[in-house]
Image 1 (cartoon, rainbow, N blue to C red):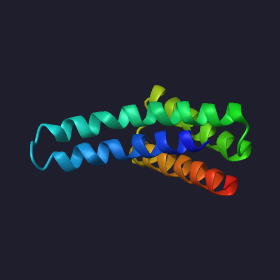
Image 2: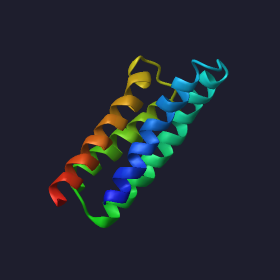
Image 3: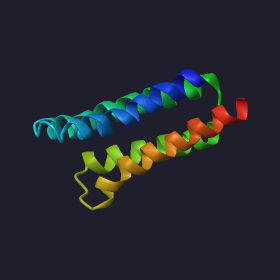
Image 4: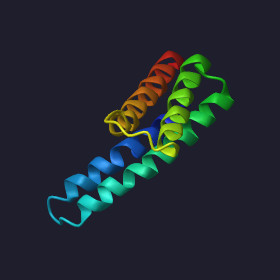
Length: 106
């Protein structure tokens, strides 16, 4: 589970790192925004892995409900400010789940 924690830290930190480098080169701002899609993909893989391992199933089911709802709203082209906020909230929620699970193992 600690490996999943490290991968999650990398996934969440990558856009921030690229954005910081964007101070030097403005073209990196685009790549920082673009890398958030990689973050989302990695986090879904992390959540699937944690679900297979069997940690914190209830919270992971809530996470997947949020992910599926988000993509369902995008597919139906339901517009709203929550479509911009939801990925950030899902990333924070999964990070909390992973960190609580790894701290309980220690």
